[in-house]
Image (cartoon, rainbow, N blue to C red):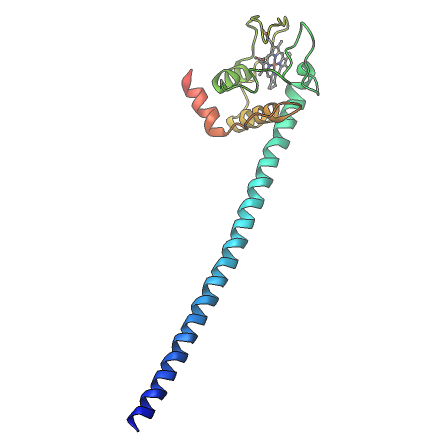
Amino acid sequence: MLEGQFLKLATLNNNLIKMLNNTLFNFIIMMAKQLSVVCFFILFFTIAASAQDLVKGKKIFETRCLVCHQADGGGVPNMNAPLDGSSNVVGNNIARLVKIIIGGYSEKVPLDGYYYNNVMTANPDLKDADIANVLSYIRTSWSNKATKITVAQVQAAKRKK
Ligand code: HEC
């Protein structure tokens, strides 16, 4: 009699554990599904936002830089330095690039071995985000394959000088 009751209790207990296990399993699956949806959206928006930066950078390039540096970034021999293939443009001296964009450039020093006699106009009105976007654009366009520039990098570069 007592044994029978004990067995019943044991089965009940077993079923309870199974049920709990099932609930836990379902809960984990549900969380994993939600997490993957969240990850997907984060990834999607990151990619979309980064494409946006380059679209904005291209716009700035077209309105402010293209006239001298040309659509293909090739510049004009002896006059305007090329941005495509420039070791400085894809290099690590971000502070120099930021300074050039803001203040213009007319140092008349050789750039990758060549001199350019035009005077680059200043862009003191560009916001930090604009500078980051246009630099990102010129560093990743044509044959250039350097890293993009963040607003934080522009601000750090400004603090340097
Ligand atoms: C009026 C023509 C002109 C415009 C507009 C212009 N640039 Fe320039 N840029 C030059 C010239 C000329 C040089 C080289 C000057 C020198 O060597 O003294 C130069 C140099 C540079 C350099 C340095 C290249 C190197 O190899 O070190 C960068 C970077 C640059 N320009 C980016 C830009 C960007 C970005 C814009 C638009 C926001 C822009 N320039 C607008 C004429 C121009």
